Length: 116
Image (cartoon, rainbow, N blue to C red):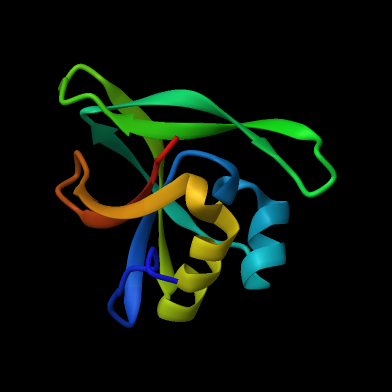
C-alpha cells in the first residue's frame, strides 16, 4: 500500500478523533493508550461522511490544512510502536493520509489529514 509511510521504531501520533476512544484502542492495539494533550495549529476540523460495507453512512472528524495560525485542533499525543502505527493506518482508511507535523509543544508527530 503506497499510502503507508515509514516511521521510526517508536512514533508519536496526534489524535483528534476516534483513536482517543478506549474501545478503538483496545480493538486496534489490545491496550489502552496514555497520552499528553497538545494542539495542532494551522488546521481546522471538518466532518467526513464515510460508508461502511453495508452502506451505512457515518460521520467522522477530519483535519485539513488552512495555513491560518488562528485555526487549531486540540487533541492528544500517543506513543505507538511501528506495528501499532501500521494498524492505525489501516484503521484510518484511504480517506486520511498520515503526515508529520509540529505541535504547539514543539513535538514532531504524525497526524492523519483528510483527503476527501
